[in-house]
Image (cartoon, rainbow, N blue to C red; front, side, top):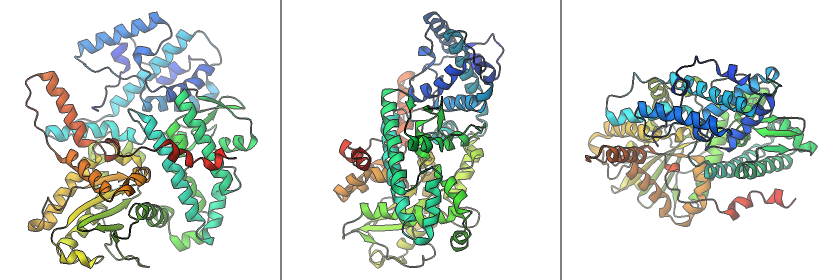
Length: 560
């Protein structure tokens, strides 16, 4: 789990002058370049040691890399084709589509130039990382190092085994889109808003939109498993739908904004491929917020009644509709005690509260965006400052962690306004939980760091009333995991609590490494780091989507 070293140009070709990546790409045939985008998306195991068709070329590269690793005492195999580098290559190709080389010399020439372009991208990425302001404490320094290495990539859905995550994303995206339509259909004043959104995808109804979306998801899943990344489309409705997800005007962007908005590209008039499978699914919920914002801002009556778009979306849909419906479904049984429903929310009210006996779950929902400059900064000070402002104090008011601590303080001081029972009891077990709506905050190290801040704040606030055996650590969990785990969490009342306890135990347990064998000691230290900084969703999953459960989401498409 320690970040893998990216192989860069000078590591392999110390005797050559490095050119810009585009210089090498422009020497490659147009046909090869357009196909390499999809090829890299479907072949995550592609690396320096299996890159070339020509065995002589491959042997030369292997020899060069072995010499480099031995000289620099590098034990683990370096990485050539990262997801980040693949996306940057795709962006360079598509943003220079009109100037690509239409000629073809040889497969060897094409592969060698693409290989060198990857090395250049890795050199640039490695050069951006800032290591001079890391924490002095050895373990915290490792966490800092992991955050600056992986936080920029967490937005890109990079996983060691991405197939389960892809299935999870498809399932949860269908769920969230269906919930979004329920929300937009719940009030007459939202209908025009919804209709304009549907038309932006060249569809005419909710049903047609859902059908085309699910049909595409099915194709993506089949092609990802078969590694057949080129699609033919002949149906006009499907063609128009896909065309709405592509653009000829791709520009370079540090956050891959254009690729996220246009995850499909056409190789010819009836053949298309995918820039990134996760981006293609994200287009229908995660990335579509910006399209919704654009439409919303043109409807004056909505802006007058509900204010700016992201405030409206976060409060009315993300928190009061999506999160509430998911949690109401999980905690459906009558013996779960929840806070009373009110027309107007009280100051300091938790976003969601549920009690089972003497066990309390406090929830705060965070549906926030990360500025591209923060994501790509690779600077721990900027990342920590951002996390503080979004999860502790935003400069004007307490948010996230501080809100949870305020609720805990009310409970400990017997002044809790939302459940009189807890004001009469002492033996309460409290679990504070942050629900996040964006996967970037499942980056390893985020929950660990936020929990450290939470522990300090709650101890400072409660002082002598702080009891770590009753007041548990902070759990950060993404809404997609809750959606997927819902059937398991509903099976037994104890399941949710046990998942939290297991995660907190593994995150907060400190293991001392007393081993004389340096190699074994390093291995154990890596294991300990992995154990402590992993997100709850990346630990052993308590529940996988069954084939039956997954296919149920496609029933309306399969039967047509």
